[in-house]
Length: 66
Image: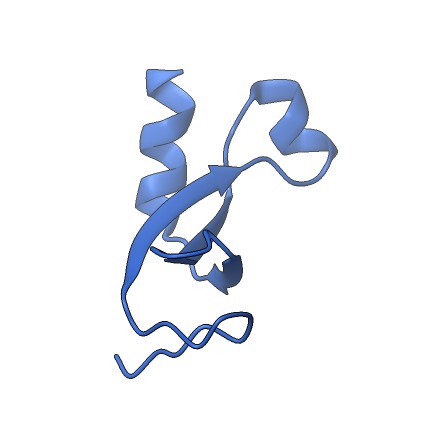
């Protein structure tokens, strides 16, 4: 990935992932059906989030393991 921080211009970064709930059904059953990838600058810690696709199997697994 060719990343340059829009705040400080640094080119070193960390990539991570986060899941969240979305919608009434997901909140009631605590199913984390939204997935985001984050890119964080190692110098100034500016972070950008990008929405990712989730799989039905991952959502089912999350439902039974919460």
